Amino acid sequence: MISATLRIEIERGVRKLLDEAGTSWPSELKVLVDRPAHPDHGEYSTNVAMLLAKTLRKPPMEIAEKLKSELEQAGIAEGIFSKVEAVPPGFLNFAIDWNVWLNRHREYSAYQGETEKGKVVIEHTSINPNKSAHIGHLRNSCIGDTLARLLSRAGREVEIHNYIDDLGNQLADTVVGILHTKTDGKHVRFGDFCWDTYAKVNKVYKEDPGLQEERTRVLHELEEGTSSTAWIGRLTAEKIVREQLHEMKAFGIGYDVLVWESRIVAEGLWEAAFEHLQATGAFYKVEEGKLAGCWVLRHGGEGSGEAEGAPSPDPEVHQADKVLVRSNGILTYTAKDIAYHLWKFGLLSQDFTYMPFADGVWSTDSQGQAMPFGRGETVINVIDYRQEYPQAMVKLALEALGFKEQAARLLHVSYGVVSLSPETAESLGVDTSAGKGSYAMSGRQGVGIKVAELLQVMEESIESKRSRQEGLSSREIAAAAIRYYLLKYHLQTEVVFDLRQATEVSGNSGVYLLYAYARAGSVLEKAGAAGQTGSGKALMEPPVPSFDGGALELPERQLLKQIAYWSETMDAAVRQLAPNLICSYAFELSLLFNNFYGACPILKGPADRVELRVWLTWKFRETLGKALDVLGLPAPERM
Image (cartoon, rainbow, N blue to C red; front, side, top):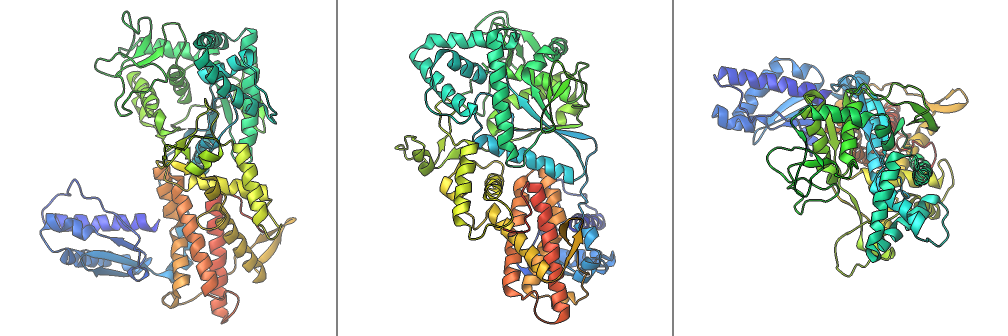
């Protein structure tokens, strides 16, 4: 990558200046290479001279000129850069020699980031199997799937898990609802019926608190796994999971293995984890007080424990200790999660067996066969920010057990939840008289937008706006638009979902990217840059043009510059585990191509200019295709 190589050269120059001054490297000094906003300032810039002014006790411009001289003596301007310039108040700007870049564009376009070795296990989706999926779940799945695609393109071996909590309160509530309430109305899918049943039983709990005792009985039977109630729970969960997988498949989201929570208990993984934990001083049984009889994981200091699912009044302040086994013997979610993560890292001798579930997806099963799942070098969990504390407790358990390296490689990709805009919430019957800027979805109240219903609404919106019916179906375009909408925000941003805004097809949208890709393909076909490969049509790369890089018109140079930034954008997205960086890059790339398309006649003019512009169009299409692949969006020949 150009920026990484440049940063290394700048650091060498800085170190030489510091050595000459007899000064060590300041602890707070970090060399950053940025992209200038103004095209006349080149392709890269650094402000390191200004950061060194205090240490070297010299004016920033003097330092910048000296550093420029050091870099030129090192031969940096004889390579990829045509010019190094020191400008007030102390910036160093670097301009790419585009003739050199063109001759080595494949080398510069290839991802060259430092990639860790070994398998990375990514867990995402992990929806409670008690009702249909909603858009909050879909954001999780889109983030996780995109991270898997991103790391795969970066050269990592990736294994994707979907954890099925078939022993949790939510499934127990749905089973109680099926057994003790009546849900009327037409339901196309079983998950929709369970959506209403789950909301209804939570309403009945308030009217008949005694019914909640039934939940405790059902939880016990689900965990024991032998009664008729357990079978109802198992069949309910399996049916809903199949529907959820079908919903996710419409968005290009798939999995390698489903890990059922019940198998963690049945296969003895928790028993093994329990024995390991007992051997540490961090795990103990409470003998008196309100948590008497509970097994607790110590978080340091004195604490009274925390009931599973009961958040602290202050989300930044948690109880010191975590209950893993309740006094009635029921395991908390975190207990099973600790056992699961010991298995993920290959730290338990116990293992699962597996059976095919659907479309190449395996599932843990008592009657299955051995498979090489798990044993990850790195583990990534995509879970919203509200689960930060339970994730921290899993990491703490690994550390307490002596697995500090694994704890360091357990990464929580946290993200903001999806809420509803006032207009969308009101359309769903939510009381919006409080005048809030957003309204939370609530499965217990039956408030939310189901994934299948959103896709249907978006498909109808796309269909109504299409002037032609070529290439992708309206449903495929709708899925791409929704997926991009959920990915384009910074991970920590709360997505305030507005149905009207989400169905827009212009501006920063997935549809805009698809149209730009298809437009480039159409131009290349007209240019005759097409060849036949098998039974389908594939656009072949035209000859690399020979031209004067200094004579580039502004739209040409801006497009070429954005294409050149692809590799380092990939590197940043991999290092930060940030899919939104790819979205921002792809949107800017498409904007610049459409500007280039409108300002520069691609197929008219002098032969050398046409040659350059056709090649630029091809290179744009190739690069955007890589970004679309990472984002899980289709690359259409027609729209």
